[in-house]
Structure formats: C-alpha cells, structure tokens
Amino acid sequence: MQTTNQLQVLQVRLGALEQVEKIKEEFSLIPALARKYTDLQRKLEFANNSLNRFLATRETLQIEAAQKAISWQVIREPPPANKSDIAE
Picture 1 (cartoon, rainbow, N blue to C red):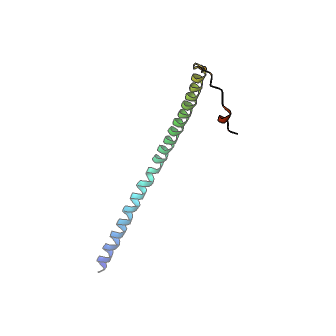
Picture 2 (spheres, one colour):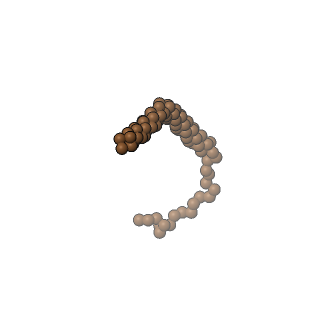
Picture 3 (cartoon, rainbow, N blue to C red):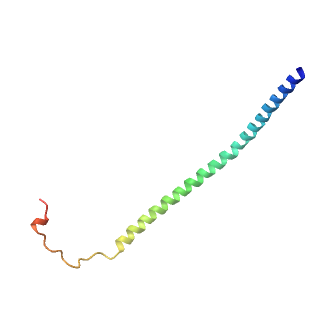
C-alpha cells in the first residue's frame, strides 16, 4: 500500500515538474516575442507615416490639378428668373 502511495506521489510530482518545464519554456519565449512586438510597432509606425505623407501629397496634387484645370465658362446666360421661381 505504501509503495502504491509513493508511486502516486511521484507521478503527481512528475506531472508538476513537467508543467514547470513547460512554463519555463513559455517564459523563455517572452523576450523574443517582445522584440518581435517592438519591431512590428516600429514597422506599423513607419507605414502609418508613409501613408500620411502619401495622402498629403495626393491631396496637394489634386488641388494643384484643380487649379490648373481649364476654368469653366458660361456657354449661355441663364434665363431671367420669374418672381414665382423665387421663394419668399
């Protein structure tokens, strides 16, 4: 009976040690994950800055294109407005 109890205790301890080893392995990954996270944050910031510069440049070019476009000209004068067309 005592041998059976000792065997069970040893099995429980072995299971606990295996869990501890697994946790140690997971903790050892944290520095690498932190570096990857930092690198991804840096890349995201760079991409956002590039996007903002692109959008600003596009807006500037659109404004310049609109300013250089042929201006509108009146083809025909509008007919005179009737008093009934004007809301009072």
